[in-house]
Amino acid sequence: MKRLTSQMMGILQGNETLFEDFEDGGEMWTGSGQRERRKAVVFPEAFSEAPAVQCALSLWDVDNGANMRADIEAENVAAEGFDLVFRTWGDTRIARVRIGWIAIGPAPNEDDWELY
Image: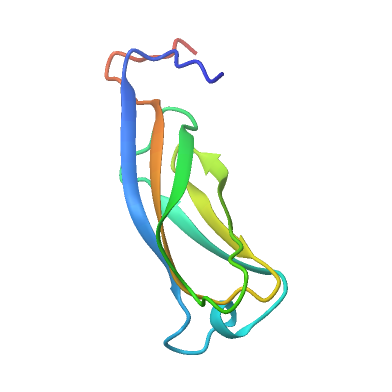
């Protein structure tokens, strides 16, 4: 369990298009085997410590002639942002992906202060 010690809680959310590989024959559409795409997400306002981040597909355009495989996660989560990661493998052909995310965590408060 992540316990929030601040009186202030912040919630940020967004949608990120990771790729549109069908337009230019990119590896997610034409390749096979292990493939990965990453995108750095920078929060418009930093949390006071690393928040909890949840990710979910909001658009998934895939070829119906192969198995559909996906692994989505937030990595390197910090107060300032995180890396959005999409992975697939095998013969999966993915034209484009958009991922929605939500971050919840302690927000800076003007009453917060440190002695030393």
